[in-house]
Structures are given as C-alpha cells and as structure tokens.
Amino acid sequence: IPCLVGHFMNISGALLCEQCPMGEYAAENGQPHCTLCPAGRTTNFEGATEEELCRCDGNLFEGRCVQCESGTRFELGSCVSCQGLEICEGGRVVGYRSSDAEWFTTIELAGAQCALSQEMARRFFLVASDLQPELNRLKLRSSMSSFAAA
Image 1 (tube, rainbow, N blue to C red):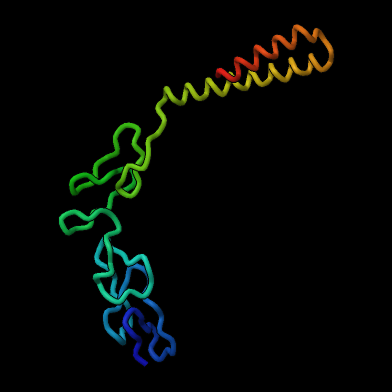
Image 2 (tube, one colour):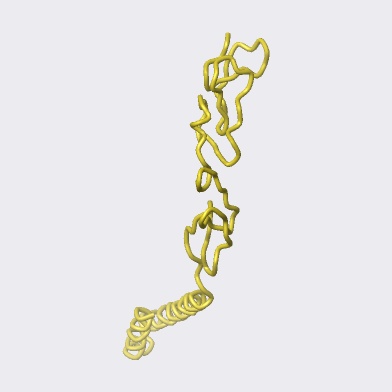
C-alpha cells in the first residue's frame, strides 16, 4: 500500500504509514522516507506535503533564512552581539537586564524593609505586652510610616 503525501513507510512490508516528522515533508505518494526541509527552515507540524510548507525558523532576509545564536540579535541580514543590558533570544531583543545600580537599589530597599518589619514586630510586641505602650505606639507608627515610604 503506497503512503499518501505527507507520510512515509520506512520499513519494507509495513502495514502502517507514518506522518513525516516536523521539519520534513513528502511531496509524492509512496515515499520510503521524508525529505528534510532546507537548512534553517522547518514545518512546525507533522505531515507536511510540500517544500513550500517549510518556513524560516529565524529571520528571513532577501530570500535567505538567518538563524541567530543565543546572545545575538538579527540586524540587516546578519547576527550581531547583543549590546549592554539587552537580553536576546531567537535573534530578537526580548528584554533588558537590570543594571548594577538598579540591583543595588533593590537590595538596599529589601534590606531596609526587612529591618523595618522586624522593628515593627518588636514595637507591636512591646505595646501588646503593655511595656511603655504610649512610647512604643508612637515608635510603631513612625516605623510604619518609614516602611510605607521605602
């Protein structure tokens, strides 16, 4: 039994045809194997029936498919290194890393909030324990204001 387009029978005498895997196609009936898509192209689905279904798995530039490595981005037909804080995947800038200054600010803020949280818990305990409640309420409010401003 000959297999239909998009399928193949890789074992002689087999009874079942299999779909061509992703990245391959079978344009004629009765193929013993599927044909690989041209370099840099894929079908992204099984059972492709013609080469035209192979699409660029990167960036198409003047009829050729350009695939960029990790850490590079596509620019005017070639792959160039990502610059500065750029995060690149699949030949595209997908985001930006935080700068050292932004990390420093975030860590400083987290540290300040942690210290203020501990101070507020301590002041709350002192108020609940009726140890200088007025003074500790005042200091608790001050800590809460500082936390909100941080």
